[in-house]
Amino acid sequence: MLKKSLLSVSAALLLVACATPQGPAQKIDTSMLVYPPPPEQARFYFERTIAGSADVVKVDSETKWRRALTGETATTVAFAKPFDVEACQGTIYVSDTVNRQVYLFNVPTGEFTQIGIQEPGQLRKPLGLATDEDCNLYVADQTMSRIVKYDQQGQFLDAFGGKDLFDRLSHVEVDPAGERIYAVDTGGVRSDRHHIRVLDTASGEVLFDIGRRGVGEGELNLPRDIAMGPDGNLYVVDGGNFRVQVFSSEGAFLSTMGRIGGRSGNFSRPKGIDTDSDGNVYVSDAAFGNFQIFSRDGQLLLFVGDRATEMAPGKFMLPAGLAVDEDDRVYMVDQFFRKVDVFRPAALAENDGFLGLRAN
Image (cartoon, rainbow, N blue to C red):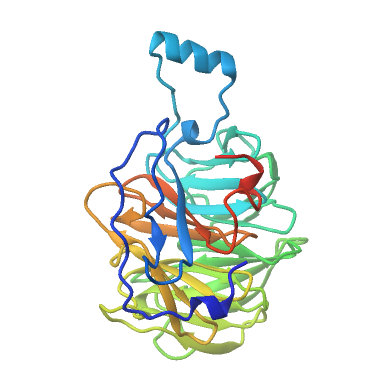
């Protein structure tokens, strides 16, 4: 488990150079992909890249022998334009806006499923993802202006919202019990709906809105993502104001962190957000090509990743969605390289946690 005390490192730490990218069937040498690099104490290791189904699907011995004898290559369903990622108990979900579906990767079992390809749960433009404590999946469908709920295996359960409730639905969060949905309406130039709309899952009714368009405390300009911390507070990426704002679950403004700037600890193009088990806040930034880790009070603890023009582990051109699972593994989407990179906290052994149930 990642501890706050272990993350108190300098914001000036540089990242280690990454290895040449390999294909899905080849083993990547991750021995040097440590964050921060030696001689500093390791906090995170790069663990794997997922670019399609072949990176997770279990291959039986007969198939392995056939490929070895015939030279047959593995087939894969690859990402076209991944947007967000979510992980729950070893199951990884990735939304794809071009292919109009959500991909389900069950790492422990080696299974792969495509979600949202048929009615009644068909998706048109899936964006933000969230899960509750039962691993039910919630998908923000921007085109349909609704949040679609599936079970852990991807079976349709319910839908919330409608055309009259959102101008530009982009992301979603849900409380652990699955009783409230917190939907991000990013709005636009001609819209005043730059806020978080809170829905009751039992009735589907709107309970209240959080924030309004503006630049002051508690006001939002192009909000992009939202996460609920272990303390029950809401952390909102206020993209147009280049900051993260913190609200109570009832919508009361609590604090803000970050500001516009080109240095570590600031924001340039903040995108995704999540929190770990200790309440530290993780924010991806599309301009920096990394994710930054902050304490609850907004102090920069570490950054992971590096901007690059060629695909490699730990390298990013256009990072977007980000998730932290129960074991504090971190998952980050890169839309340009069409991948999800996974990072393991140094305190967690390689074969521990939900992903560790299946040996790499």
